[in-house]
Image (cartoon, rainbow, N blue to C red):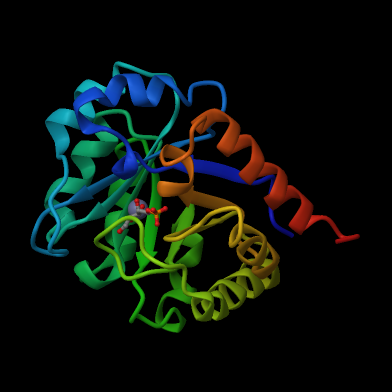
Length: 226
Ligand code: DX5
Ligand code: ZN
């Protein structure tokens, strides 16, 4: 069974020159703020790093869901946990020993998340799930916002949901990429219970209202009478 849906707006689609205000606009509506950290190496794009996240942490009470699209997460990820991130997710493709880093993150005070990019199968990581609090399935290729949702990625979501159910694990199953009013229901039906949305929230006239709508669609898709 999926848990009550989490909506995590991605600040990648926000106005970076007014980041604190943009986060303020979703206070009271968003469950988490999704913070995309890109290093122009693991992905071609470049966003923000630890100093900005440290400053932004002071500007809001919303829990931070940090998505590290960086190489060498062993070196950098613990700093985000120490900066007060609620959850720190690093990429499976960038890490030699995901279980070791998950333990380090939990010891540093955050939840631990593992991200699976578009071209990476999920099977080799299913055994590691007990060491993680979140499993992030990319529904695009990581690197840029505003891409088209890939429904074929939902097979991975179903596989993970089945494993979570079989082993009775308490892992959040998160999807990221192209999540919007016309795609969130299928992701929820496949078993996702945390939803990143950049364009769908910050591209909307009223970001808080967009969040409420997305959450209602996810709840509806999860309901047994659906
Ligand atoms: C892309 C990022 C996503 C991005 C999603 O690599 O990980 O979090 O912001 O943006 P949308 O919702 O516009 O696809
Ligand atoms: Zn992301």
